[in-house]
Amino acid sequence: MYSVNSNLISYDEHQKWISDRLNRIHNEPFLVYSLENTMIGMARFDSVSDAIDKFQISIMVSPTRQSEGLGTLLLRKSCETFFSRYPRGIIVARVHVENSVSISLFKKAGFEQLSKKKSFLCFEKTSE
Image (cartoon, rainbow, N blue to C red; front, side, top):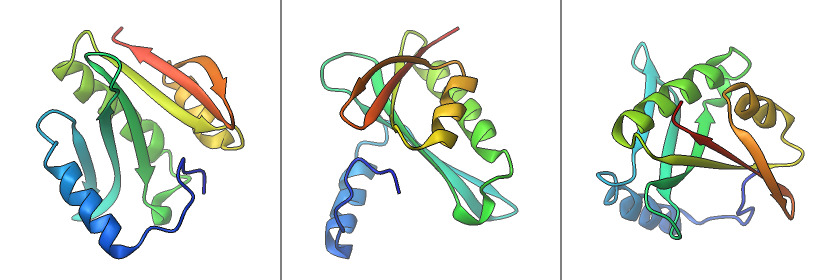
């Protein structure tokens, strides 16, 4: 796993986090994707504190649906949804240097690699 936080998270901690996160859903989009009533992935946009209309994306495809090209589709749809709401917005992504699949995904989606911080590459995308 290439998560920024690799520590084990307790059920109670996760419940608190998800409750707090869902309370911010009106300002920070949280998108869930399903196909035939089965969740296939999600994307969320967390506000970056140092800028207005700048959000960090986190995207996940269900493990049972990976390697089907869904990541490309979900990222494209997520960016379209984000930019329809924030036309002058900026999406940032932090990707672990060893996560070649995600690096390729974000590059293919038009994200520009800006920097490297520790073990993570920083990508950015603006509206086209």
